[in-house]
Length: 262
Image 1 (cartoon, rainbow, N blue to C red):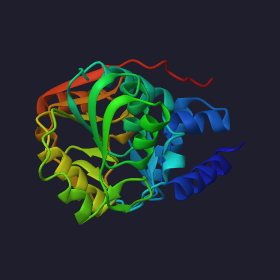
Image 2: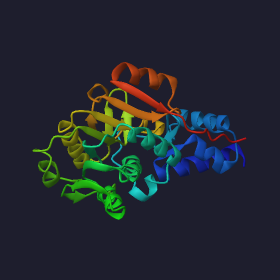
Image 3: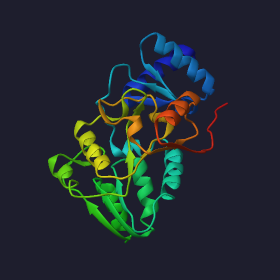
Image 4: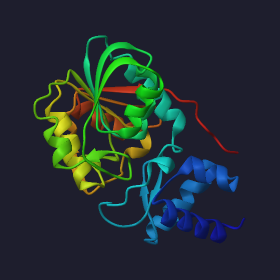
């Protein structure tokens, strides 16, 4: 495929998916990662998309677009599974654990449902279903509320259900991570619910694969300094690692096999 045709296809992909990864584009077009990066640089300079760490997103300001759960669950699967495996090590029997809605926390739920003696508090119907289907021997508390495209329960009923709860540990999934805006989401009501989960928790651990860096949702959940740990994958850039190490309590990097294209 000629460069112009490939770049046109990249713009089409970004318009359709809102956010695309360099590795996915390289595999799609059968070219090297460096070739795709050069294409993105050209398109970014032309104002046709916005370059972000590890990929590109639709050009514009803070995003209010929220992909559905089915689409998000197919993205960065290896990274999410590795992050979930590391996060599971922090859960101890007897803990009251919050799981926000999201595909990485959903991957974590599939590991925690094998445990006994946990109390799980979640606003995710899908996460609650994981524990139910597994016949888990932990207590699961599902908040009420209105359902979003991420299968999160939100709104005043959901937030009020947390006002009397005290969680030992919260695993928080996010849409984006930005040096200035912090941890963000494109859904205003989901941000409100996530802030309520943060307020109810003694310790907050953000689970975010490296593609979330540079992605900006319209609403901030928490500043970088407000969380105790971030668990992400080794694809995170050096500068992003430096910023997070300086501003969050602890940064954990999990290694994922790199997908290189010839």
